[in-house]
Picture (cartoon, rainbow, N blue to C red):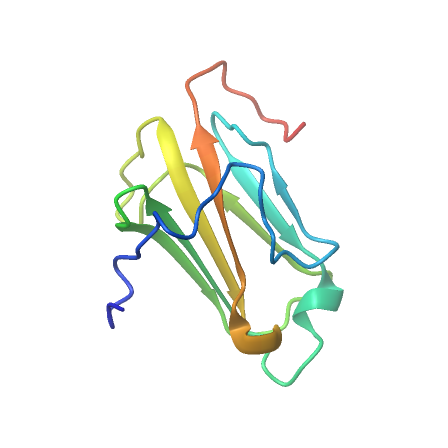
Length: 130
């Protein structure tokens, strides 16, 4: 494991675009595939059930390189909504292709979180999430 968190071995943990075997009930991730934005919604009930309501959300490319990271250290009423606009931490636009979304809520048992694949495609820009 890399201490900096900038790379991850994705080949052994990703089995399919729609498969999220460790995902608790109540969260949503859509649309998949996406063109402009990808949204993850985590309900308040999943975040607030413990002493550490912090979250660490990361996006990796298929080589395991960290592209984007969000950290939340406080409880957010109503839950957590993360929108990825397809940009890296430095503002570069990520190309079309497969990406890994890694969500770790420290209140979840073992803080194991969810890791799943999403597909960015070219298409007509959309402002909706349907």
